[in-house]
Structures are given as structure tokens and as C-alpha cells.
Image (tube, rainbow, N blue to C red):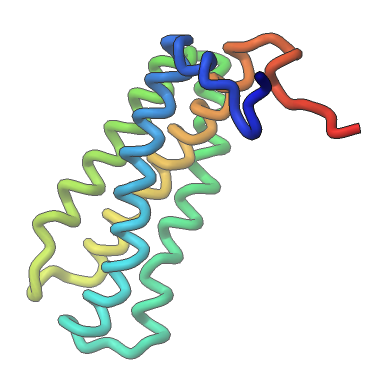
Length: 145
């Protein structure tokens, strides 16, 4: 019987299983960040809606920079080292934001948010490459016609 979306046997491949677990955990952090950080900036710090939305901009810029650097590191330092570095950068950003309080300068919040983005750029680029390179061409996608 064919799977409608994704062959579950792919998760028996260790690299795919680990990269998907790490990706789910990082995505949970991403969702928490994008949902709650603007609310925190607007509700607790008293900034307007424009500022609370713009506080996510360093993450988007950092993501772009991180994916460019991560793709270069992927070639020179390998898949595991690059993904580990990305996850460490995400953890640093997460720990930094966990200790944010009302008196924390906005600049520091932006720096931690940029670290998140750089880490996501490093990690998610590698996770995509791992998923594509761990299987044969017959499992990379199916033609509908």
C-alpha cells in the first residue's frame, strides 16, 4: 500500500529521524518566539504594534545570514558539525530570551532574536540536505503524472 504523503520507513534511517526530531524541537521554539515575543513587547514593555512586529526582523535577517554561512560550513565542516553549531546558537538565543525581564534593554532582545535566526539558518539548511541526501532518488518525491 502506498503512503499518501510520506513513506514511514524513512524514519528508520537514523539521520532522517534525528534531524526531524531536532527540527520539531527547533520549530516549537520558533512558534513560541513568533507568538509570544511581539505580545511581550507590546503588553509588558508598552511598545506600539509596529515595534512589537519589527522585533522579529533580526530573526528573519539572521536566518538569511545563517543559511548562507551554514551552506558554506556544510561543505567545509560537514553535516553534523554544522547542525550542532546551529542548535547551539539556537540554545544560546533561547537561554538569553528565557532570562529577559522588564528591565532588559531592547537591544539585547534583538540580539537574542538574531541569534535564533542565525541558528535556524544553520540548522534548517542542514536538515533539508540530510533529508534529501539520505535516500535514493525514488524516495525524494513522486511525480503525479
